[in-house]
Image (spheres, each protein chain N blue to C red):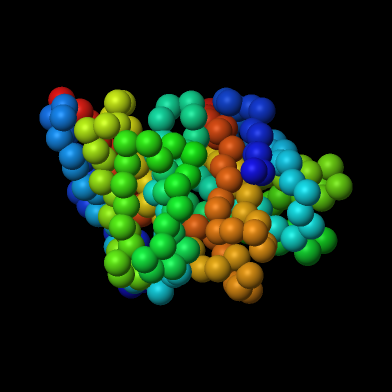
Length: 116
Length: 115
């Protein structure tokens, strides 16, 4: 079945460590996104990528980094520079907006990151 | 950037009754997409319904329907015959047809269904 997979579901990080969240999709989507979700704040965009080897900062990119070496994969690294990384992280993918059809974002099941 | 506003942080509805969730958006574009997503306690984001701005007819999906008022930039979600499984956080989202690939989300409405 086609879909988007995030791993791990739960992740614990010690202060000062970098951690990488995985996101893989087999939907053949060009665009991929990372969102952070905190209580009462909805979804905030961290980074997005429209094509391989290209990505753009979203609204809250500081302290995060990404790569897009393959169409299927868009990993997110939470660096030690991110002051408050404890949150729920959602990865999504979609087709181009000018395509007729299912232009919605398809989401993974999320990763809960906790700093200990 | 476009903004999406959900002015109702929390709503409640009696089981089997109807409830309407509000959403407004700000844009200067004429072509775009609008979506409603449901996020249950599992936190999986589930598409409820989509609307293309060029379509005048309001979208419906079983018990879910929208009232799309393009001139007023309003996109409300109506849930009929509410069920306990409808209890969730609901997010309204906007996507441009042409400029960029971003989705813009509202802050969500938490829906409680009362048995």
